[in-house]
Image 1: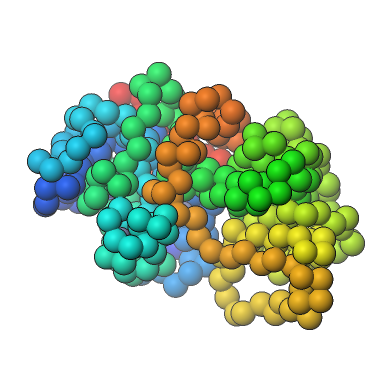
Image 2: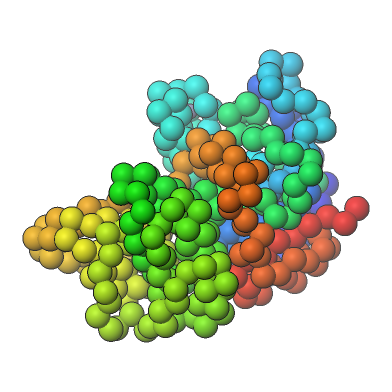
Length: 341
Ligand SMILES: [Zn+2]
Ligand SMILES: [Zn+2]
């Protein structure tokens, strides 16, 4: 089968690889219908992390179940599903506690399409068939009435934005929220949208990128254009989504005393100093960590099905499947690749 493959830094092509097969009772095969580009993908192919080529690309998709192992319950061939980008069993202690990014049965960073980070090739979703090792835990059926392209990013970036604000707004209902966007284009916009859907009083959106600011305003947030050098106002909940030390510093300065600083950022490169003296003195609550995709899928899909979350409003470019090798490295806040046949 054809699989989109990074063959050298910045260079992508379709490669022929053996189609995966079901290897155990609890597995499924899924044919991707629409694949979204995660905010990390352009960094992966640019060589920001040490890369070992070739590696497969794509870890956010809506697909259709084409084959199921004998022991899978609650799913049927033909179901439309969102696929968790993280491989997780659903049955170990951590998975049962909702910590599916850290499944005890899998090596850390067991994700589709991210071999440069994990060192393990799980295959990419820009392919004809994806093998899902724990179907019941990793697949979430969606209504066939929903557009696959609209929900493709629900595998990863949509729940990442959602979880950045959901638990903090549950603890502090109706709070004001600041989203600081500095280099991961779509996650902060999903966070802004989720904060508004979950009842934030107001959502401010700080960025140096005019396109992101305009889109944030369209979603209902209040844009703040900044190079992150200025002194920000303070907020009870601040989300740091990006890749720059300047953005991180701005986000920490914007957390009010006893306020929440939530990082959804992965900082590659050398360690970055944190102002722990200030954070200690003011009691800034610091939350860092990956999203637990499989555990979050039911509540995020429910919010979308209720019409309160509209991930398609963040999509800025949709291309046909065959255009993926050319379109994938190009800038766009949110790129979605879909099959037309
Ligand atoms: Zn991702
Ligand atoms: Zn597990």
